[in-house]
Image 1 (cartoon, one colour):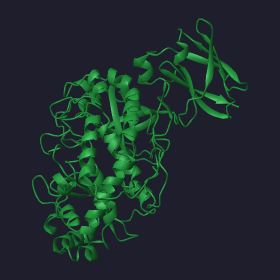
Image 2 (tube, rainbow, N blue to C red):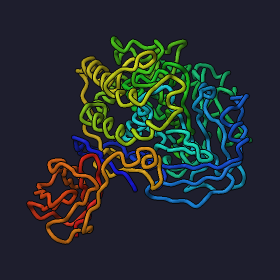
Image 3 (cartoon, rainbow, N blue to C red):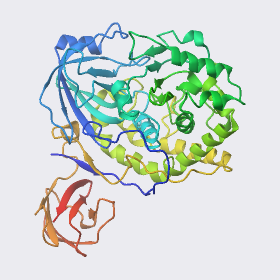
Image 4 (cartoon, rainbow, N blue to C red):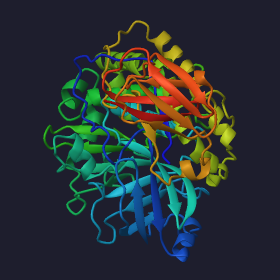
Amino acid sequence: MKKFYLFFTAVALPAILMAQNINPSQNKIFRFNEVMRIELTMSESDKTDLIDMVDVQSREYFHATAKIRNTKIDTTVISDVGVRLRGNTSRDKFKKSIKIDFKEFGGEKFYNNKKFNLKAETNDPSFLREYISYHIMRNYGVPAPRTHFVDLHINGEYMGLYLNFEQIDDEFVDRRFEDNEAGNLYKCLYPATLNDVNDISNNNVYIIKNNSSINDRTRLINFVSELSEASPSDFESRIDPIFNIDGYLKQLAIEALIGHWDGYTKNSNNYYLYEDTATMKIHFIPYDLDNTWGIDWGFLDYENDVAADWAGGLWTETILTDKVLAVPAYYEQFCRHIVTVAENFFNDAYMIPMFDSLQKLLDPYIAADQYYTYDNGFSSSDFNAAADEAWGNHVWYSLKEYLNLRRTKFLSDLSAYASYGAVEPIDPFDPLVVGSPSGSTSSTFASQRNTDMSIFPNPVTENYFYVNAVAPIKEQAIAVFDQMGRKLPIQVQNNYAGEYRIEFVTEPLPGLYIIRAGEISKRLLVQ
C-alpha cells in the first residue's frame, strides 16, 4: 500500500525579469519530494568487503545487480552495475556512502545517468541540510545538482536512508550550458585556493574530469593568472570576459546565508569549474553542502557574522572571493542577492513547511535506519526534534534557529540594499502528493502506522463520495484539499463504524484532489 503525505507552502511567488534558470527541473529519476527504493544484490563476500573494507580509500568496484523503483519507474533487474565506496573524509564512517556506476562493467546509462551518488549524511541529524541547500541553489539559478532521497537495501538488508545527488560530469554540463560539453570540467579539492598558477597542474587538487588525455589547462591557468594580476580598477574588464561573475555572486550569497564554511571561500574546497566553450567563460559549480546551517566545529561566529566579512579564508587567502567583493559594484550585487534569496526562499513562510513536510516523509525511514545511530549517536527522536532543537556538539543550531538567526542578522546588516524582486522557482514546494514505491521501507517498517482507508467511488461523478476506514476516524479530522492546498467546504456524515459520507458544499471543478483522514492522505479524482 502506498503511503502519501501532503506538502504545503504558505507563499506564492510571482515571476520577475531575471536570467532564465539554467537548471533542469525534476524528471523520472530526480523526484524531489519522494523516496526512491534501490535494491542491490551482490555476493555476501563482496558486501562484507564493501561495508567493512580494510582500505577505505579503495576505489574498487564490486559487481551487483540493481532494482530501482519510485512512483514513475519500476525497473526490471539491471544486471552488472558497479558499486563502491564514495567520499573523501567520510569513508571511515560506519554508515558508508555509496557510488553506483551503471557503465562500469559495460552497461548502459540509466535514464541518461551514468552514476548515482548515495550520500549517508552522517553529520546531520535532520538529514535535510544538504537537500535544502541544493534546493535553494537550483531555484535561484546557480548550476547545482538535483537530489532525491533513497531507501537502500543490499542483499535484503536495509542499509538506511541516503541522499542521491546528480553526478557532475559531461551530462551535467550538457543539460545546463547550451548542450555544450566540450570544455574542461575540474573537480577542485583542498587546497584549491586559485592563488597560484603553479598549483593548477596538480591533479590531486584540480582534478580534470574529462579531456584528461589532452590535459590542456591553458584557460584555467590564464584565469588564475588574471585573478592574480587584476586590480580593483581593472578587475571587471579583465575577469568578466572569462568568468561568470553574476553566477558566482548568486552562489556566494547563498554560501554566506547557509554558512557553507567547507566550500571555496572559507576552506578552498568542494567546488567544480567548467570552461564553457560557447561563451568562453568559466562557471563555478558548488558541491558538498552538508556542513551548513550551523554544522560547524568552531570555525564561524554565527552570532556576530556579517555579510561584509564573508570574504577571507579560514586558513589562507581565497583570491577569487576576496577580489570579487572588493569591487563596489560586485559587492552591491552580492548584498542584493542575499536580500533577494532571503525574501524568496530563506524565510519562515517558505522553509518551515518544507522542514515539516520532509520530516513527515522521512520519519519511517529514519526510524528503521540502524546505521543512522552509529556515527554520532543520533536517535529517531533527534531527527524529529532537529527542526526545533539544536542537537549540540557540532550541531550548533536547529534548522529554525539557524534560519531566524542568519536571516535576521544579515537583513539587519544589509538594510540599505534592495531586493531584485520575486523569483519564480523551477521546482517550488507547491502542494504535492508524495510517497514511496510499493514495497518500500515506508510501508515495510511504518507498516500501517496510520489507519488505512478506501474511497468509493473514485473517480467521483456526483457531489458526494464515501470513505471506508479500518478503524474509526474523528469526523473533524477528515478534509479535502485542491492541488493549491486550499481546503474545500464539506459535510461529513458518519453512517456507521468506519464508513463516512462526504458531501461537497459547493460543486468542485473536475480534477485531482487530496482527501486527508487523520494522518493519511489519498488522491481523489473528480470528473
